[in-house]
Image 1: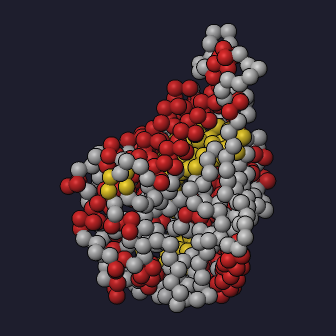
Image 2 (image 1 turned 120 degrees about the horizontal axis):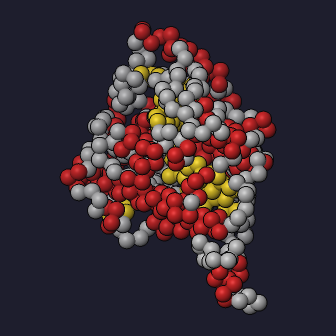
Image 3 (image 1 turned 180 degrees about the horizontal axis):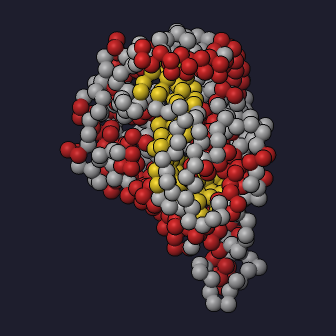
Length: 523
């Protein structure tokens, strides 16, 4: 069965994006579920700036991450390859500098590439194709967060229910401090681009750590919602003994059963999550304002995604690491002003598709060495990607063997060798309440998906690779705690002499260069 794109819109100009090399503003959120956004049907969240992008752009209705965990998802997105192919097992994996990324392919096409914000790169290479970074990362670049599958009895966890129990308004937080800096430096970079008369195309990635927990927000965002507006999960908590095995493991991994999670606690955590989405939305609005007031919007393609979602109490689960829709389905919007007619595309796509898309835009698609995704540009011009299966993996702490997801059309398979298969028909059951793996009417597609999964992954070999890689990294991490550790964390440098008045320059000269728009007679 071939699934065709239902988007019946085309570019208003006959010049396709891949021929024009548009400037690209690539905006990422962290842990923002598509299920929590109004243009995907959420009844409470407002997010006006993102809603405007969605209304004026192309919304991909069924976009998925390829691992429901920050580091592996981002490595997969950047490389265009499944996490297992590039060693992207967990949040402390070594992302090799020898793996080409979407930023490398853009540079080969003549783009200037810049990153402001989080990308969760671990290892010595903290650029991975970006020419410059405007901020450091919020999380460590070392191997300290490496899981330990070799000792299943030793619980390795880096998170519990504290962030759910302590949700609420605040004035400042680690995440707010970081994202304020990310947005400020990104806006300044865009203003500098507006001052620049260079014809070189640019790609600026702006990657926020919000709405990732903790579920806190400044009062102006918290107060957008009244307490009685906040909804409870659509699917109520499921008793642990009735959960599927993967969910039960994640439930125990986060120590959810040890927390007193009342309805008030759930509402407060969701309130914080929604308020944090509004905070990110305000940053998107600020970026769009710069584009519009400087006329950069005229030839800018804006792409918005998240690395994965958040269960937010659905089924009694929290955070990520689950393949259920709240955790695995992500927002994806393409916006290009009046050069792209608004529409919605029902194709099943994933973050793996971004590298081929950007390479086609840059004119370097023929140089891509390997990719597990496909360019999304046909969807933007009314075409189809054809019949595809979207894969995802979870290979980190909380489990002790690989777990997989495969989505084909509206069928979703959840699979690991030790557990019974789970199959959902998302078309008939969008809340994933009925496992149809035992329904004879689904035997043929279930068997086909299981065969495809087993052809895609050699589970025993992959498990052995993961344990060997974990053991190496854990040893290296122990050694780095003795003596002086290597310095891998990125430290941005700002050359103030190019920004402010210094000896040898007239004040009026520097002021004129900074003025936007230029003074009359000033180039």
